[in-house]
Image (cartoon, rainbow, N blue to C red):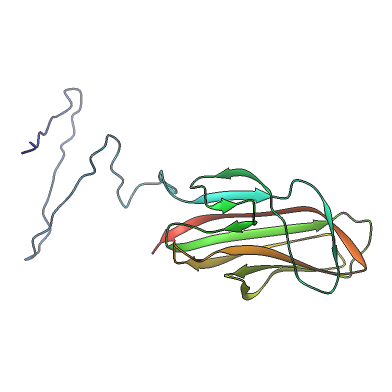
Length: 182
């Protein structure tokens, strides 16, 4: 049987009080079997170890045709804390169920002047709500959405749309992080 030991700090002068709430229900406090700091509701840590965050981007420019939404290639990463972004299919599939902030952007190199750039996120192969960005007579479009993922099969991809003959996607990125687990 494990033992519980309470040891005071000889140089400290404060009092540590463990108080039971006014309840008629039995409660159990289970501590993790690892060294470290126990976080409380007053802790300022945003992403404890093991939480999800990533940033993927396009490593080299390529052309897309106008008039149709085209999946944007994101073939490189700056970071991917849980190895959830797949650069072979430019897809983020989180393994923790919850709410994620996903942001995305893509840019035209300016060789042609598209009258409109639209970036949107597709969840599980379908449009997620609406465009994350819509730029008229510009070269870069960006935006973000709060999205729920089931932590198993849900995924998100970036699609772009241009109105022009052909446009060169000269830069693109998608990033995200877990806001709150479900």
